[in-house]
Image 1 (cartoon, rainbow, N blue to C red):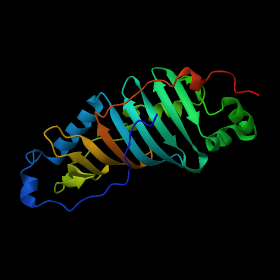
Image 2: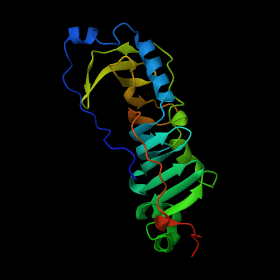
Image 3: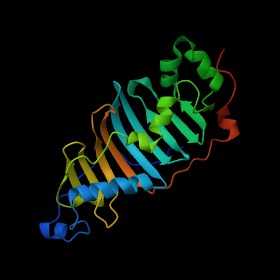
Image 4: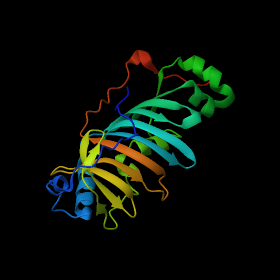
Length: 228
């Protein structure tokens, strides 16, 4: 159910000549205008894939998610040494498939019994169930981006390439470094997450990438009680 590929480690090629940069479709726009439009295009996207490494609330989190705003998300969330889980969120129904390490983290002494009972299947629950709010929040693009605003004038860098995509770097004193596509419709490719309460780290986006929210088949779903 991995919703998106790629890795957060980005490699920059040598920047093109200054003449190539000034000829780009964003040359006539200020950094603030480019950033504002790129955020608007992200918020208006019907689907987005997201890879990221974040440090939130003292926990290192790795994201590999596909998000359809207003519909749900699917992919994986890693919690470092605490384990990881696969998930599919569609509407208010949530399917979770933690690995053994994650079960041991959350179930403690009951972990072995739970693992044997679930047998590697997805656990079906709802977004309103206890303990689900943090996962639902990560699947909500508006909440992921809530701490990011265009609050100062970012400076534009020379157009270059990032993972094979022609991009313009933007350096924002508040939001850190960001890369947007050097196109007439700029879209965020990569950005830093500011350390102001929502965590720190790097997020890699693919705006408009296909996202599959198909629930796992019934044979792969556990719906009984996790009690022994």
